[in-house]
Image 1 (tube, rainbow, N blue to C red):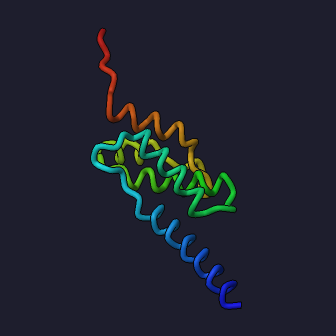
Image 2: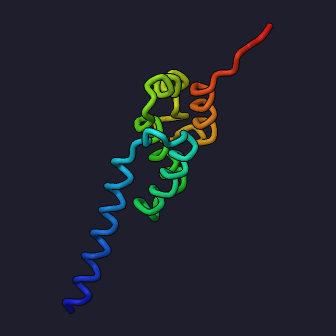
Image 3: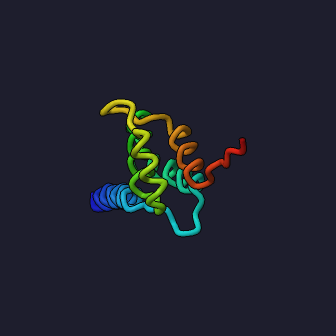
Length: 110
């Protein structure tokens, strides 16, 4: 009986730690934008196992936008509107493209 309780609470603690780890995720100073997004995608699956893919993508999109360390990139994502609807984020690949363009803008030569 005690072992079953210990196992239950150990698993609960692991879930809570995974959620905390995901929720406090911020882009590291030398981490690329694509690496940051990849890390968030892995972390959200561990933290919110069982949620729909749509819900996981929404959580990743919010964390991606709020956790990027470059204010210019964050503003660009916010200006472009990172949500499709109140319940659904734009595709993560689209957000990544906007962020990468903000970091490395193309120069137009006419």
